[in-house]
Image (cartoon, rainbow, N blue to C red):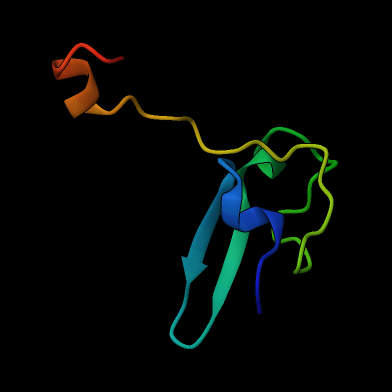
Length: 65
């Protein structure tokens, strides 16, 4: 099953077992409003944040960043 917003969220982690895969919401550790393992697909989430953008090392080396 597709995880919805979790696939592009900086707070989501994939937890795998022998024959299973779950999406863990790291926000659940500090905020009880978020379920530890949300029902998928997540279509709306007020805590969704895209991953932090890492500067491209080649761009910086060439003076473009």
